[in-house]
Amino acid sequence: MDTAARSSPAGQRPVAGRQVRPRRESRYDLLMLIPALALLGLGLVMVGSSSISIADRDFGTPFYYLYRQGVFVAAGLIAAWLVLQVPLKVWERIGPLLLLVGFFSLILVLLVGREVNGSVRWISLGPVNLQVSEFFKLFMVVYLAGYIQRHEVAVRETTSAFLRPMALLVLACALLLLEPDFGAAAVLVVTVLGMLFLAGVRWWLFGVLVLAICGVAAMLAVSAPYRLVRMTTFLNPWADPYDSGFQLTQALIAFGRGEWLGVGLGGSIQKLFYLPEAHTDFLFAVMAEELGLVAVITVIALYTLLVWRALQVGRSAWLADRAFAAYLAYGLALGICLQVFINIGVNMGILPTKGLTLPLMSYGGSSIVATCIAVALILRVDHENRFDENGKPRGGEPW
Image (cartoon, rainbow, N blue to C red):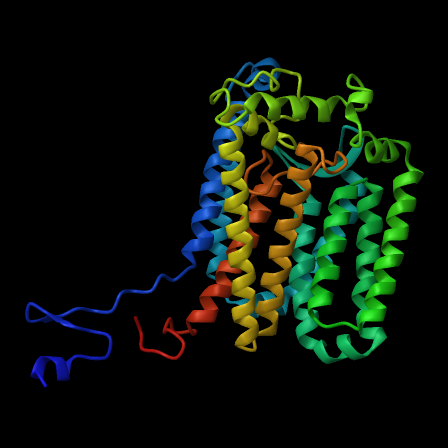
């Protein structure tokens, strides 16, 4: 056997008398990082395009919302970088404290919050408004992942261990509904139920709880006239296109005008005071009009890749017997997936109109920063799946 070949470490070949060093492994999952950055970039472009008219009318500056969104994206990226430096054991330890801060914030917003369009969801912090519910959803997932880690067997076998987080969920939903923020409450409920389902709770108990929640949700929907109108209007928005069905009909017109390749960036007609909240809740419809079906499919594919990779990260953590990391990744992936599904469903008329932003894309500092933190936490889970505390690949040599 050739001497150079015998002396070469496994996986290295001698080339022109020199050894080729092993390829340095990326510290973070690029198949999740790249879609997230692409969505942030595309969202920034679409916020600028969709808000030009309203920004010029209200502030005399066409790119007012674009500049602010740029600041929000920068803040989100800085927050994500900071989160990536914090070990998961720290997040597991401070989970209960984060939940207490979240509950305090939900109470505070009811006391001193700012009212917009009939809802009190924001705390005014000078030039920006903090939407507490965006961060509370994040804190709840962190806490619940730690709770399941500590009481995994009890959650599966006893009713009391299962009902304790349910009591916290009921309290949180009551505070959210007082704002009111029915959309955030719905996302929180489904996320918590999904995490507990993955934890292996007993089927009959889970089924009874789901039925009870569905019953309560139905009662809440019919108890408020505006909710009942929203629940029924989406079935036939053209029955009242100038009142209750106005938002949805304008969104559907935007989709129809976009066709395959769109009318061109900046060419949307619907954003010109026809489509309410064009840069927030209905950003997806404006994108469909300007960039067409190709962009719609591309964005859905990017979100699908992001969520799929997050679930894969959770599975890897589960196989490595790292329960907190696994449930954290699963919960965050489920929360992002739900919000994307609801927002796109509302824009396309397959779900009742609900005020939820499109993660990583819609205008709004709280949503951008909270989602960036969520993605960073999943990336941290992936990092700790592959590297130990010293930066060495698990089961291998330092890279």
